[in-house]
Amino acid sequence: MTGHQLKGHWLAVATGIVFFVSLAFPVAAGLSQSTEVFPRFWGILDVIIAFILAALAIVTAALFDRAVTEDIRQATYRTYRVLINTVLVLLVLFLLAGDRIKATDFISLIRGTNAR
Image (cartoon, rainbow, N blue to C red; front, side, top):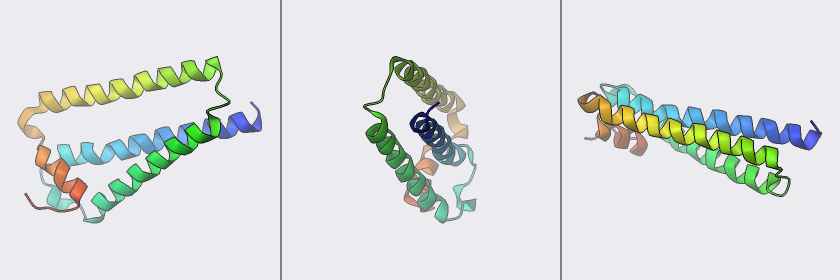
């Protein structure tokens, strides 16, 4: 790998890691029996990590859009399929879990409040 490709590889890996860290916040809030136990800064941290994820995605697209090869397109497509299927699986789990997941807890965590 050249230096440019190596830099792009690590940027893509970092973006994927930040995606899964960002995904952990709503999952934790949804599975929690009581969001009152979460500190107030969790909602703020969730928004900050989501902002960082958006920035990483924009930077990746801006830096490497012209250097895209067919191999990169295929790897991107595979990554896209994994991520979109992850979201779909989580949606199915949310629908199957029924009353054990409270949708209002997601909103409370996002807003940074414990109000119902």
